[in-house]
Image (tube, rainbow, N blue to C red):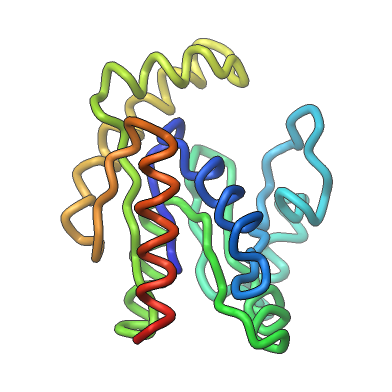
Length: 184
């Protein structure tokens, strides 16, 4: 299961809900990043926080299924070790990745994966969510808003688009998508 969305669309909230609701069937692939942890984030739980040097060494060793420079100087990627760990537990892997990373994963797994694009009801709502989050300084916020607008142009390349307007409805829709995919 691949979940992608512009920053601020609620992707992490939805994936956390699914992990709580369907934990016996799915496993979360913890991504790696070179960005600094935000307050409350724990290495190995939200992300594997790596230096740029460590990240690039792992690229050279072919340890990534996919990776991307999502923001200038900040790399994100999916480690093969995370995927194998979850497969060894006989669970379906859930990816919470950026839009380009999601498309890369879908191209590698084909029909063996369901790519879900979460989008906000509007760009204005997205801007409001990013502003309320207050995790970035103004120039970073502007970069995220510009990137989010660009990422919205990729939604038609995903298997399913879910508009995250009413959170409980989004939770139910995504639970149904996961459960239906298990049935296949």
